[in-house]
Every structure is written in structure tokens, then in C-alpha cells.
Image (cartoon, rainbow, N blue to C red; front, side, top):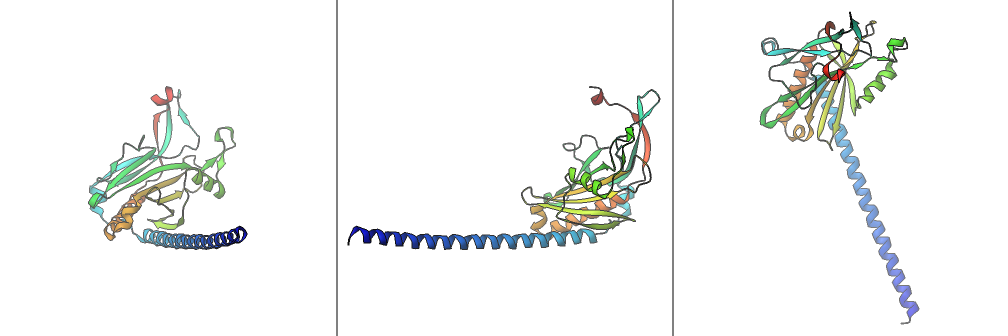
Length: 266
């Protein structure tokens, strides 16, 4: 057999192998794409059902817990860039709301610098279950009120304020808590192993510079939530207590505080 024929046979065999490998590669790619699509569909279904369950949960009906075994806390409203100084300027007026949490909720010192501005609470359950509730306020004004260019944010600007705070949701809706309609959003991160449920309420425009967006997050471990029915029930119990906590928020009050803290002076 001459060299030309041998070369032709080798080229033909190489082509057959390449075509076979290409076909196998494309098959694997299609199978991977199909599995990825199926996984996304399952995750989407899981999130939709979870949000529906969250919406259906009622505030906890345990007056003994909330009347006898709870503590009252304070959360400052947004100043919206306005500083109401008094007298010689050493003190100022700030807005705040009071709210209650169960005695079993413990402040997470590692994530809370000032609990009147941004409080993170630890909630513990059975078999090592732990979740967190975070409460804080965001502004409802844009521009500089001091030079009269400030004004109440419109819907688009409110959305921008939320987005800048990292509030993006895979699922969202409205839910009535007590007598008030709150927004509820869900964010599930497999890479960070976190389920974050966000309740937020944009206070109506009544001409006060203390008007805020009230934000309450509940964060829980995704793997434990999916692990068994008991953990899911514990998660929904935490949601129930969080909703009850939300109903205890007072109307905005005002108090006098030092205009500058030690950190401001340094």
C-alpha cells in the first residue's frame, strides 16, 4: 500500500473521530443545558411557593409572649439630610419609632454598631437552627433639603434608593400586616446559602422630614430550610414573629439627643 493511500485512510479516520467527538460534545452540552433549565425551573417553583407560604403566615397570636415576655426597642427614622439643631447647636431633635421583640431575641453585637440605627437580632430554634432579623430605615427624600432642592422621591426614585441598598428580589408581592400593606420580597442565594425575606413600607407623604422607608429583613440558612419539614416550620414561625414585631411599630415620635457623638468630633 503506497504512502498516498495510507495518508488518505488516516485523514478519513481522523475526520470520523472528530465528527464523533463533536457529536458527543454537543450531546453533553445539550444534556447539561437541559439539567440547568430543569434546576432553574425547580428553584423558581420553590421560591414562588415559599413566598406564597410567607404571605399566608399570620402574626403570632400569643399575647403572653408579646405583653409579658418582650422588650421595647427604639429605631431612629431617616433624617433625610435634615438636622434640627436646638439652642447653641449642642443638641438636636431626631425622629424615632418604638417596637417590641420577644425576650428570646438577642442582639447580634458582631453585626450591630448602633441598634437605634441598624439592629440585627439573633433567633434560635431547635437542633442548631438560627436566623436573623435586621431593622433599619431608608430616606424618602432626594436632593438637598437645606438649599430647597430636596423633595419627596417618586416611585422610580424610591426604587433607586432600594436598589442602591442592595434590595433586589427574585420574587415579590404585597402583604397586609396588621392594618398596613407592606411590600415583601424574596432573594435566594445558593452560593451564599441564604434565604432573605424583606418586608418594607414606604411611609405616606405628610410633609414630615422624618418620613422613611421601614425595612425589615429575615435571613435564614437555605440548606437547613430545605433539609426537612421541621426546619421549614421553624422558619415560618420566625416569619410569624417578625410580622408581629412589625405590628408593634409606633407612630413616629421625637426626642432630643446630642448633636455630635464622640466619633463625629474625632
